[in-house]
Length: 133
Image 1 (cartoon, rainbow, N blue to C red):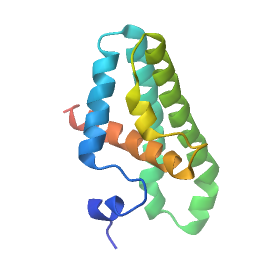
Image 2: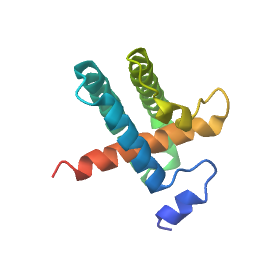
Image 3: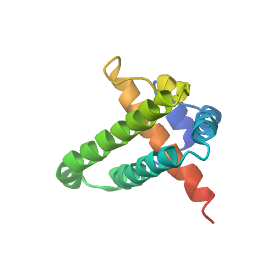
Image 4: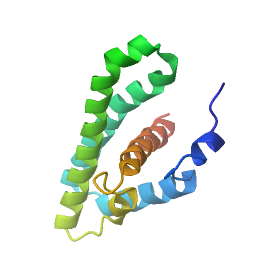
């Protein structure tokens, strides 16, 4: 079966493309031309690209291959979350709201937020990739 966007939207705590675009815009506006924030965003994007590689291959891999790569995928996901947190913390220190981070949620409150953070990381790679042409 081929997965389509509508399948994703039926999942708990999914974000609509429009919501992700709005969060990304908010993030970009807060980052602006701040060199330190841009560097942190670059780190986030690099972590997201690595995570996306694991996630994109997931449905293609056999059960054995998934078992082999599960720890690496989890580690990459953890790095994405750490990068989101670092960027938000920095922006808050600069007097920005970083409300986008609140919308994405804390995995300690609900395990579904972990998935949502991964989803948004994939969106960032999607948006940046489209703009790279």
